[in-house]
Length: 146
Image 1: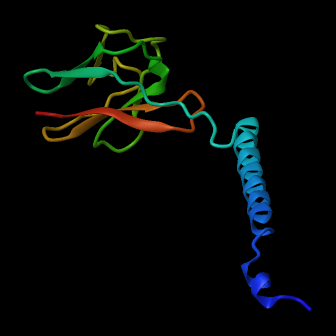
Image 2: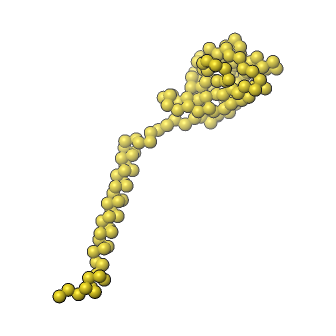
């Protein structure tokens, strides 16, 4: 006859079962991590540059000088100057790169790309950076017209 007391106190099989469950869980997690790296899940997104820009306005505010004051070299084709005006932004189309200390001028004659918009006192001007793939964009600086 079987001893019922021994049946309830015998836990020899518990340890191997827990060990197998833990090994399966570790294997699944490890496979998921390796799969994420191999399949490039999460992707490599380009991050916005960390640069400094200075805005200088003329006394009568008919033009603005935007200076690249610091940071790495930028591809100017990835930058847009936008403001409160309606219509297209002012893209930097004729420059291939901006380094620290370079100056770009935008005035009412449109000397910065195809831009000939008027900005009024209190308007906000923004420089927006767009990644080379076009998937990501971010405002990297802004300024208020005095």
